[in-house]
Length: 75
Image (tube, rainbow, N blue to C red):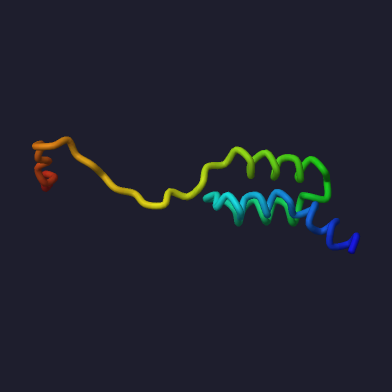
């Protein structure tokens, strides 16, 4: 039981990044996996996981009403 808690605490930055659905969750996981044992790597991964923005649920472009954007010029 203590081993599971220890693994959970070790991968806490990765779990936070996955729960927040950040755009760099895989990078945080690998940083945590390979450098988390140093302590500094774990703290850096935790800071990145907490300060990283999440994936946008959707992207759309909204032009001002009544404004037409012409097609791009050709060379």
